[in-house]
Length: 499
Image (cartoon, rainbow, N blue to C red; front, side, top):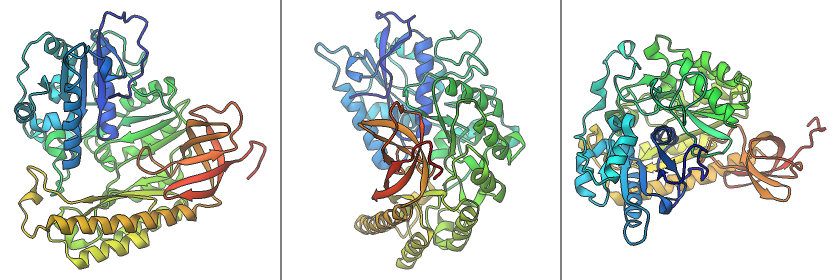
C-alpha cells in the first residue's frame, strides 16, 4: 500500500526521525487536509515516507461520504493494520478524516485494529497525538457532535480566528517551526504530498444547505470562507512549488464570501488568482446551480487564465423530487443555465452528479432525468444509486425503492451517460485545446487535461507529436483527432502554427 507522499525528506530531517505515511481517500478537499497534517507532522519532528510498509506510523485520512467510501476507508485501515507484526516497521495505524470525525468512539469500538481514531479537534497537535500513540498511550476517541453548532447561525458573525478547528484553514502559530509551511505570505500549514503540476486550494469549508440526503454539514460544520489574503498567499506559495493549475475546492464554491460580507467575492478573487505569477490555469469546483449567478458565469467564462469549466451539482431534474431532496431548480431552469454558459463559452466543460432511486422517485421522474441528460450535453456525469445516510432527513422517508430497482435504474442511467458523454467527446473532434501536461508517455506522447477536463474524474487528453523537451506542467496546443469514451486523442500543433 502506497501513498502520494514524496519519498524525499528535508535535509534537516535525519533518518532517525519517526517515519509516517499519509494515505488519503476521498475528494480533493481531503487532499488539502492531508497536506495540512503533513506540514504539522513534519514541523513536529516526523519524517514523511511514501510507502505505508516503510512507515512506523500510518495515518489514513478517511472518507465518510457514502457507504462505498466508508467501506473503502475501513478496508484501507484494516490493510494498514495487517502491516503490523513480525519484522515490520509499522507500529501504529491511526484513522483521521471524515469517517473518523463522523463516528468517533463508535468507529474506535467497532474497529479495534486501528490504534486510534482522531477527530478534527486533534489536528493542531497531530504530532503530539501521534507520538503518544506510537509510545503505547491510549487515546480516548471523541464523541461525535454536530459541528454546525460550533459557529454562529449567522454567517456574518462567523470568524476564522482559530477558535474552531477547521481543516485546511490552519494558520501557523508564531512558535511553529518554519519547516512545512510557506516561507512568505500567510504561513498556512501545508506540505505538498504530490509533486504534480495541479494542486487543490481550499476556498471554504462546511455547508449551510440542508439537502435531505447529505450528512456532510453535520460533521464538516457550517460554511466558513477563507479570507482572500490567505487564499492568495497560499496560491503564491503553490506557484513557487511548481504548481501550474489551482483547483479551487469547497463544499459549495458559489457561497464563497457570504460570511465575509460579499457574496460576489469569488468574482473578485478569480482574476487575482489567475494573475499569480507561475499559475497557468485556475479551475473552480462544486457550484450549486440555484446559486450560480450571471456575474459568476461571466467571470468564469470570460477571465483569461480561468478555465471555462462548470462543475454543477444538479442531482436530478424532476422538480418534485428535487424539493424532496431540499434542493431547488428543475429541468427548464438547468437547461437555461447551460444555455447561458454556452452563449458565453461555447466549448465550456460541464460536469455534474445525479442521484438515482431517491425515495419516492417515479418512472416519470426518472424519465425527466433522462430527458434532461439527453438535452444537456454534459462532458462528464457521476451516477450514484441512493442509499440511506445516518442522521439525514431522507433516511426517515417513506416510499423507499427496493435495492434491486435502485441498482437497475442506476445501471440504466449509467449506460445512458456513457453513451451521451462519448457523443459529447466526439463533438470536440477538430477542436483546438490547450493541454496541461501531467505525464510523459514515451516517445512524442504525453497525457494531460484540457480546460474542460477536471482532475481525476473528467477524462484526459493524450497528445502525440509533442515537442522534444516537453515536461509535466507545460501547456501544449493540440487539435482533437479522436476519442475513446470521454478521453480525447489529439495531435500537437507546432509553435509556428497559427491554427
